[in-house]
Length: 116
Image 1: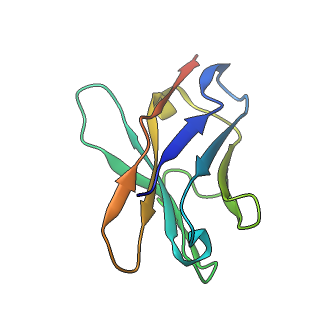
Image 2: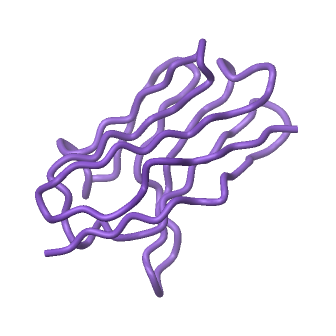
Image 3: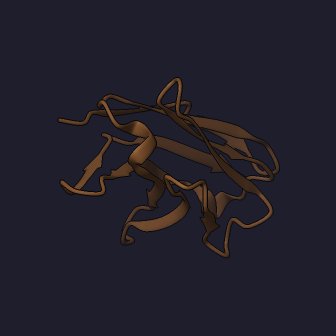
């Protein structure tokens, strides 16, 4: 079983920064593809950033150049540094782990609110 727990959400002003972290249990973290998703009120959940087990990174176009995803396999941690925040970044942010065999796991989410 894999458990995920996000932290670091909160309030920020437009142009500000927040750093989200996600701690992951499980014995093979280095083999997991890790992602950050977000879901704004009334909208579908969307992929924000992904870092694979091979450290291949991808971003949604809306966050390129502003957000940075990283992972620390020794600490079993994945982070999302969010700079130059915009009001449209307001959402609940979810951490997700995709196992090579055995499905996808989600954290409970952490809210981010950006004021203009």
